[in-house]
Image (tube, rainbow, N blue to C red; front, side, top):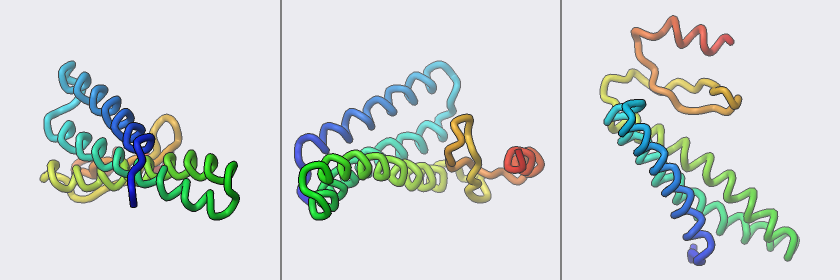
Length: 133
């Protein structure tokens, strides 16, 4: 994979914005240090996912239909790369920095997308209620 400047900048800007938001949340006390470290991992891996997704999506789109396929592949690849990279990064970050967790639980957030959340044994009843909703 040879990174072009557009995909590199897209990853840097996206990861930078996410990192800034997480830094503000940490400074305002809405996020703990371990959670911040896990989110930093998510931001870095998500940025790499965007870069790879843009590059490989563009190549795939070009091979299917040059021109419009390149544009569509770039957008779809960037989106999927961000989602996959962020999910993998947060899961890895939680495994590294949240030592008290028993595993990873996938639950929906307010936007109905799946996010990796730490699963604590003491919160089993609350987690069951969230999953069932």
